[in-house]
Length: 179
Image (cartoon, rainbow, N blue to C red):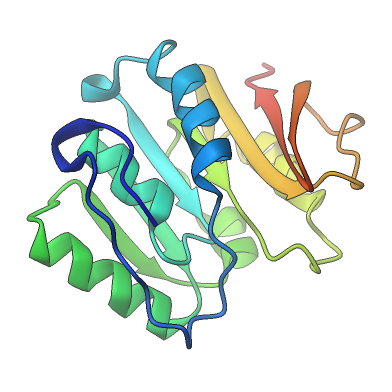
């Protein structure tokens, strides 16, 4: 994985092969950050990275000056890896939570300007993510939820849906705050 922008721009990291992950491709990540970085003032934003895996998105957010990013994954190896990278590069903006994402979404009460979810593509309950975010009001006004998912999965009937952008076999579906 490569950091595309910010203070760690150009750094390459190789996560352990034993982690159960499918990192967001550099091309898709660059497109996503072009959208987010031109829409939000990262220094005043809090973000939530669900199914953080290698921390690819969390590290990119921290590199670009996000105020705070909460990174959630249930796999201890992923949490350990992201913590080791955050410690190595002094990324104090990253706060890690080892938790099942769906239980976390049910119980969490803080709201965020940016929420990114990159669940395993074989999960059958991916559509539950925008439902739980909307139900528990986890987005601030003008906030965005981005769900990365297989392009064959359609999420346009979920609450707050605004658009989908396709990058090969992966797509980003965007959801906005709906009062």
